[in-house]
Picture 1 (cartoon, rainbow over the protein chains, first blue to last red):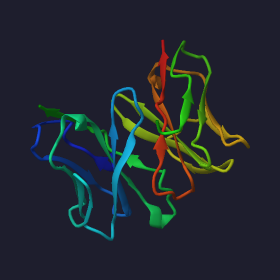
Picture 2: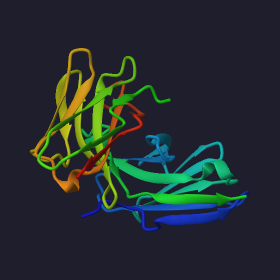
Picture 3: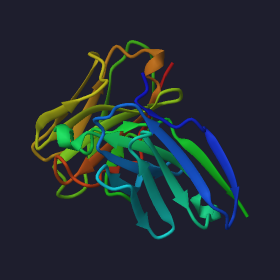
Length: 116
Length: 113
């Protein structure tokens, strides 16, 4: 049973427009959520995170929104750039329940293509 | 460059064999994590070590084992290999057990034929 789901395997957007990547989770014990970006032949790199006590976290062009009642989070990239083309993974953990931040449950990823 | 080093980068071996994947964490990081990425399963957490002790266990098969040595490097041992074990194995590290960010290595590609 997948606890973290990214239902869109791929997304294509035009340069300069907004990219919205979605993620749903099923376990209400998750209290910390992260987004990782992965380029081919490289390991995932941390992008942005959000704690369950917040509903929004912003870092430059990247904003993560959390809707706990819907068990849904999204990553907004504005404006999108060709260099943002990568696979984006959503991940969740249960820090308050003794879980390690590294004991992450990942979604299967969404491949973002930003076209010039 | 994340600072996490994994060797080998690529490995091809036959079914039934045993392999060892090696990971050197970032300088000063005490926690090491192992993840498996296969085509249809995404990234799966396998196991975590903190300062030499097993800290958390995920979906790690009994045929697999890991350890973290006093110099903090870690090894993932995969035995009685099956075709389905073909995957990309990532190591990651963080400074503490509940560090805010974990850093991934570039992965070790294992192909079982």
